[in-house]
Length: 444
Image 1 (spheres, rainbow, N blue to C red):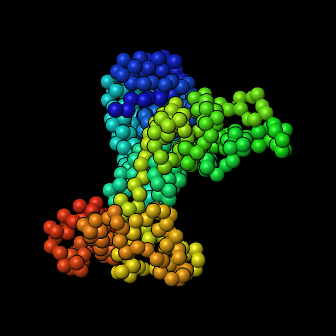
Image 2 (image 1 turned 90 degrees about the vertical axis):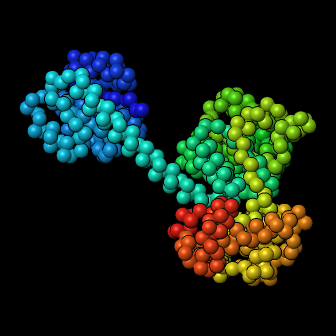
Image 3 (image 1 turned 90 degrees about the horizontal axis):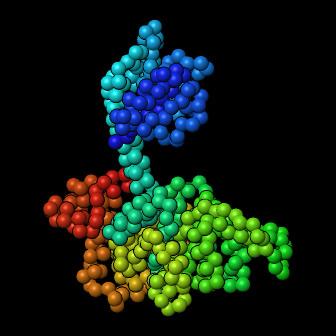
């Protein structure tokens, strides 16, 4: 339960007595002699209660109440009043004060009012947290598209990891969306307003890697004209995304490890240490620990990067997402190119569902864009040698259910009529494919 209390009173005897009562009762107490100091040092999103005298030199308790309500209208404020201030305090309660206590007051009266105020504060903060989580879930549903269980798990993991100050390793095949997941980790966390810096480790020549990562001073090496800020320094306060981390030269791995351990770096040609505060999200296709055992990657850096790990399922393992992704890519390409979005025919949908998708989501996006451009139906194998008939049937069934739920915006009765299914059968199939009616209620 919450137990933080701020007491504002210019009388030392009142402050000391209140602090003693509350501390003995288990409260975390912070004292201020004036309202101005309280406002200047009030923590953001303060999760407690303010107790303030009404009459003080400078800003009084009523003015403080007004300022606090501007910061947070739901922040409980208990006013301490003299006998002549009672009518004023009653009016203040009409304007938003939580309670008032007339001096002299008993410890029991103060403790009772505080506990009630803190219970109310706890409920309000929990309600806010639930609303924020619901909003984040809605946002991430539109970023990481898919109805498969693996995508549902991934979205949950991203929201859990995004606010945490830990490095994350993303493992997945080429084209599976690793950078998009890294971007979500950044955008849904506390570093969202700071830089997101992406670096593909396989695209930089080894002789230029150190300068690209750490930056350099003017004249640090031949051709180094002027000072240059490196990716690590530029990402200060934000997130550095290192794609294909397994391609990083071993010499640079040692230097990156030192930066992660000490949170400091030195530009090439400089002896000055620069403090950096950044989160590293790395992406790889192979297992980094296996790479380390083979001598191609530093084991200590692998452990440093893999504080948390996310695995992206290849598209062939989540075929129920294919139609949804194709539709999204088609609409996006149509909007960008000024064309009409394409709706796949039955045979084309069957080929989309049975294709192996070695290029994963990136390949599917390319197919959708080609279809929008009208370049002729993309040649795809009719079947995937690694995909059983039962698996293909399951994927097609999931797509049919999802399409019907989308068309009817979650109207179960209309879906039953269209698909000619008993209610119990539809419920079982929706549960098996991870489909939830609420997901489709607001679908346009």
